Length: 427
Ligand SMILES: CC(=O)N[C@H]1[C@@H](OP(=O)(O)OP(=O)(O)OC[C@H]2O[C@@H](n3ccc(=O)[nH]c3=O)[C@H](O)[C@@H]2O)O[C@H](CO)[C@@H](O)[C@@H]1O
Ligand SMILES: C=C(OP(=O)(O)O)C(=O)O
Image 1 (spheres, rainbow, N blue to C red):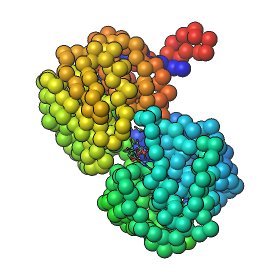
Image 2 (tube, helix red, strand yellow):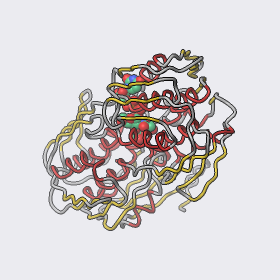
Image 3 (cartoon, rainbow, N blue to C red):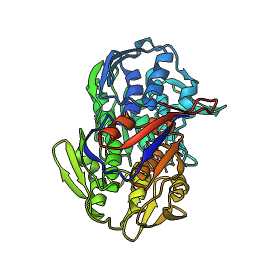
Image 4 (cartoon, protein in one colour):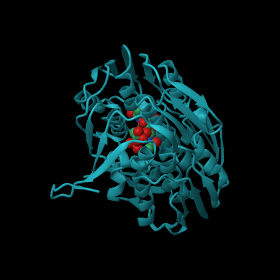
């Protein structure tokens, strides 16, 4: 039950190193189940979603060797079960990839329904549609998905909605299937391309990742490999917005600027200075922020996972802005928290209307989910006064070493440990 205490009105400056991508890591680690060798994975972010997914693999019998903080080796040959009822799996979204990976390896997976951020209903019908098309059958019982096949056979699948999770799960199930699988209307996120590259480095034949048609030519075996995960687009975007919100000037290092284009474009529209280099990006703000309208979209559109963070910036911009959330039905739980800090936001259906104000004021707030928590951090950094943020376990799912990274940029951030007994102790 830790919380953050952040003194506002700071101006972030200096350099920050971006870690490996959460949403790539939680796909690539389960994908190692499909390998007949040892997978050495580098640039793995040190976040709780990763410790959960590696913990699940370990409990299933995988041998996991830590090389250093961001590199480990997974040997999945010793996995002895296709059943995942682990409590950890219910708390993260990435555990849904165990369905595709175990189905691909054992032709049978029994996996608890996944967790992750609460946006209302998060269906998996397109994942199941993909498994069925590959020749599997499934049943849903007692909160578990039981999916099995005598044989997996390549097929053509058109996704009714562009789904990251379904695209990944079908790739995982199809990579060792007999014949060719074609996914149409596939998701194009950077982590889809990263997973395809990882699978190909093990000897798979996946083509077209990054476009909306992905072809997977099934192979019998996958080898071990050494692979480095791409930088986290959303962690980078979060620091970019934090720089803008605090009138800061920071160099965001170890990024792929191409992945950040939709975020950079909106920041520039708001009057923020952006300078791109090969693998870093400088973000600086001096003047007032312009209002701006944003619609979240699948990649290469503006990422929904940057919605709450950019809402903080719009709430201190000049004029009235709108955010149209087109991916999730309910990604507005941050709004009530931000309103406690003085933000003027009203939500109508999937649209937030944000009236810019001069500044936010500190208040006790909660991280209602991962990116809502990131938004509270940004709000606290630029607000007048000292803000306390509770429920920071959500933030720890996806941001490595947040306190130290922010401190190095000049933030005044402390963690307070609250034991169950409620007696607070500052650490
Ligand atoms: C672990 C991970 O990578 N999580 C990301 C992944 O979540 P996740 O994989 O859950 O998100 P999807 O891309 O699948 O969901 C996109 C949309 O499709 C709908 N849908 C999805 C699947 C399905 O079977 N049926 C269906 O209707 C969803 O309700 C949502 O409206 O992509 C989201 C959209 O970029 C991000 O916000 C999450 O950070
Ligand atoms: C929604 C997110 O994650 P998850 O799908 O893992 O809950 C996110 O990373 O913003």
